[in-house]
Length: 332
Image 1 (cartoon, rainbow, N blue to C red):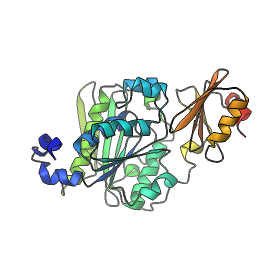
Image 2 (cartoon, rainbow, N blue to C red; image 1 turned 180 degrees about the vertical axis):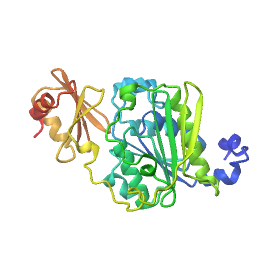
Image 3 (cartoon, rainbow, N blue to C red; image 1 turned 90 degrees about the horizontal axis):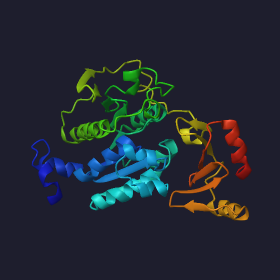
Image 4 (tube, rainbow, N blue to C red; image 1 turned 45 degrees about the vertical axis):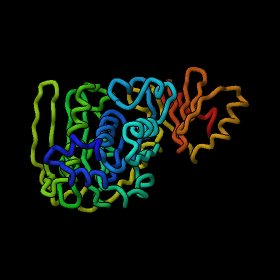
């Protein structure tokens, strides 16, 4: 307990509170900007187990706002969840850390549902948040909605089935991501602030028996303004009355253009067979790189990145028709 000495001196936490943190399993959804900072804070504070899930890999443009990662991680195209878990284990080897390189969806998370105590939303899209809203309602897991872009950050703790949910706050979940950081950018100084607030709310949820949800918080770090407002649970809310799971195809199984990345995403019918792919590349005399989560190679002006779960990214175009022609040279 010595490493947590200064934390236990805080009267709101103390030894009793610290012992509670050490027993909790936290799922962190998205290990990018907010998620990497939140995961580091959780590791240093001594939350007993962290489960990290992220479908992407480290790129050079991530380093402006995502802690835990290095230039070498970007050069090696290390999966974010894997790279973050390695870095966190060096920070605190006393806690347990598990990583998942995949979407947050019914298939990937249901096996963990009974073990998760709390969920931190550190993702960047409302499709995943809509899924989390319903997944947490179904399994009655407390979670914290968090987002940031530009100079603004938003947070709301949600404790199903009794508190207001994401639909109570927003009504219909937005179908577009007009305020995503890929489009309007994000102030790098904002991210550790909101991550700290997120973990502070999480700590209070765990330690304070009188913690109240139903409050939405918004921060503007450029003008140093902060506001909060009460969100009432709507009796007719579809998100926290039926608990019906999202029926949409998971994001990583869709053929889509990735906003701002000059990239088209595909999905192999089955999980990728690296041996078969390597044989194909050897026949074509194409060199490749491989790490524990993915395999990558270049072809003409394009770069392929193939994950073990069958997700394929084709970099070099935003034109789906052009991308499909190149993709089908290698995959049916």
